[in-house]
Image 1 (tube, rainbow, N blue to C red):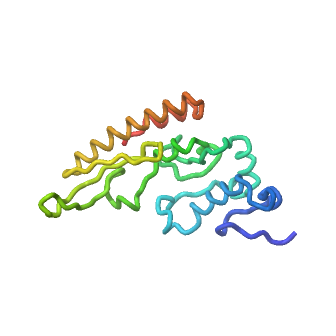
Image 2 (cartoon, rainbow, N blue to C red):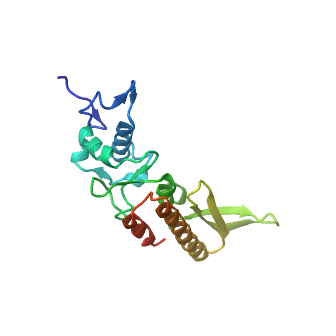
Length: 196
């Protein structure tokens, strides 16, 4: 058997035949490959993944696929930090599959906000007199593909609006996911404990 090509220098596809279906890569392989690439690929493109890593077991595709086959729900996304806020490890004990509308609630958007708090970006706009006004924009994803946002003159006001709005949206989407039986109560509790 020839030497296997490593994915990002660390991931081993030991199931070449199982990674393809009718010539295309399987969804399990895509999920595994994307996870490896986020952690060990070009982190200039994904700075929120700096410091993230995949457990040794999941660096081998067959081991990840075993867990994937038991847990995957069609259309759901792999998440590593809902159960443990701030988690940097992809592993069987830290990851879950969740609906897209839950997963997008926790997007960091660090590239847009720089050093500002979560949910806040900085910008100027022209007022009716043509004067440049400094402002802070608070914005958050509503889980349904739309962003809610509001402009403020003071950072503190923007942060307060973001916190209140984000908690309300998370509660609404958690209630939706529970009613659809798309998440467990453990996942719901983890999301509702979050401070924004």
